[in-house]
Amino acid sequence: MDRTVHRQHKPEPRTLIEPKDPAIASTASDISAPIALIDEELARHIDAAGLGGDLSVGLHEAMRYAVLGGGKRFRPLLVWHACATVGGDPNICLPAAAAIEYIHAFSLVHDDLPAMDDDDLRRGKPTLHIHTSEAMAILAGDALLNLAFAATTRVNIDPSLTIRLVQELTSGCAGMISGQIFDSLPDADPAIDDRKRLERIHRNKTGALIRASCRIGAICGGASDESLAALTTYADDIGLMFQAVDDLLDVEQATEHAGKRTGKDAEAGKLTYPGLLGVEGTKAEIERLRTEAVATVESLGPKSAPLVTIANLIATRDR
Image (tube, rainbow, N blue to C red):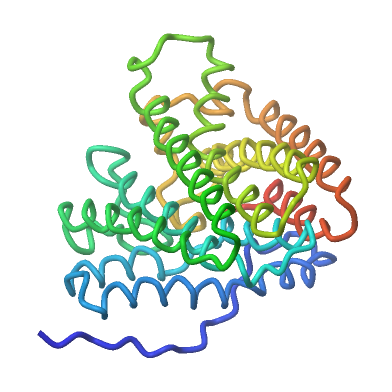
């Protein structure tokens, strides 16, 4: 069977998050500049596996659909900017940045399935199981998980550090999956009070992969123990903040604006920040986390400016 060759094309410029404040628009654009390189890296690994004969044509196309059809590239940008913050060359970490996005894409594909969140819209287009089939979506998610670890081993650093990258990716992925259990199957674990349960869900479901992103970038950049610890604290803060904002958007934004179905958490009776703290309490928690994240990462010096801006953008995003 002939395999379609996907010709490279120059992607449209994308911004991580469109800033509400025009004063930081140029800074946001600078932060998002690596997205083009990240997208090329994502396509390169998928096509190498698909066009080389390891994957079926249908699976190859499904993986491309799941990964290359838009997205903020938030997590791989964290890899890039964490590496730069500690003085490393972020180009070195591109395979690891791609690996993080493959894990994220795999999680979205599986989360959207009828047995999980049963969503039919993702990034403004049909979810993968709607576009293809449930079976193909399950298998494409599996293949993306596998590809993530293959990509991680291709980072051109000392082999001992490669082992650390694999360990970080493994930990982030395991935490993400456990967080989904805490969220969707709460009776599988011993009961704890709602506030602790909410943080446990999101430190894992959303936060674990964000933490892995910052730590992987820092390791690629040769971070000291002190810098790695600061970036870990920063990541934990913005991970909770990202989910708190997401919960708020689920309450306040329309589906057409968000690019995915909103209001679903309330329908499903899930534990959320607005449900527990109220809208104003959630906004106060977002500001507390933003302040702590910014103060922590600013201690690393002027090269941390992109990570400061990312924290500010996350706190004010509206989609």
